[in-house]
Image 1 (cartoon, rainbow, N blue to C red):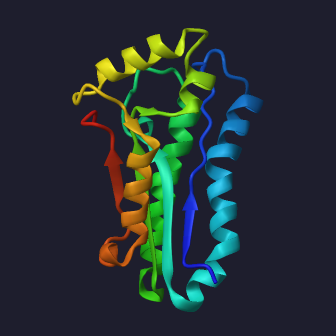
Image 2: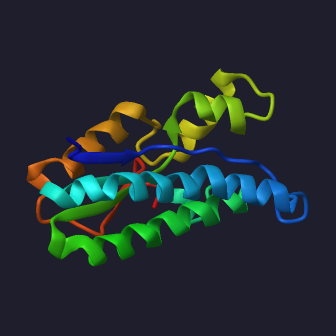
Length: 170
């Protein structure tokens, strides 16, 4: 049986509005938003049988400038936030909770693959850590712990929430 759906996918394409093509814009939405739609669509019937939880992973880029020119990513993740709220209210009375995690500057391979711009991982890590009020980026474990909480019975009264996990950025 399915008790939890964890939509944890993200890909950022650097480039402002002047550089992005329509195909790049659409591809970014396909990865970051369409994947959430499809995951929910396929698992919702199972969750409605017994209740359950959906945890979507979004980004602080969806609510504020993070220093990276990726408007398609920011817009797609903002759509994930609103989809989270809409689904939470639509299915709350049927036992399905829906929440999102807005990840801040997190130390993951995606950063070095998609956002480094050819700079060394050490330089990028130091720059990103310096932007965090805590002095350090979060880790994948920080996001995982938040997701486990939101999926758990301890969060049974939380739905439609966008939980910011960002070392104090927002």
